[in-house]
Amino acid sequence: MRDMQPGTQKILHFLGNWAINTLTVAVAVVILRNHISYGNNVGNLLMVSLVLGILNAFVRPILMLFALPLLIFTLGLFRFVINALLLCLISLLLPFFRVDSFGYAFLGALIISIVSVVLNILTGSGRVIVHRRPPPSHKSDDGNGPVIDV
Image: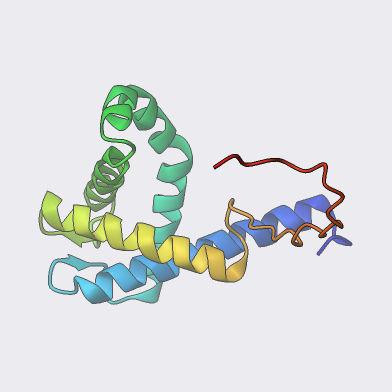
């Protein structure tokens, strides 16, 4: 992927994120099938995940800024409330996407967040990178190491 043009890399990164987002919304809809629906049309599902991605990119940072005191006070857990608000907003913007109540939007946001983290870790497309260092080499004890008095 390093040999590609920067524009091609960005498009592939966007498509990968969109696919993960689509899968996470589909999982949330399957788990909460009687309370969240998209009209059982793949095109609708793709549209919902695209709008969710756009709202996450542009509206969510503004909401996070306004809710910063609550985010600090709740140690970041208010993020799920913001994500639930975004799901409710999508249900207002797209007539085929339905969320029964804010409670189910909250559960959907929780499911979407968990599945998204798992898929991003599995695909390696997340922001978190884990590096494993080799264990330190053992030097011979020359008597000049730390002393512990008992």
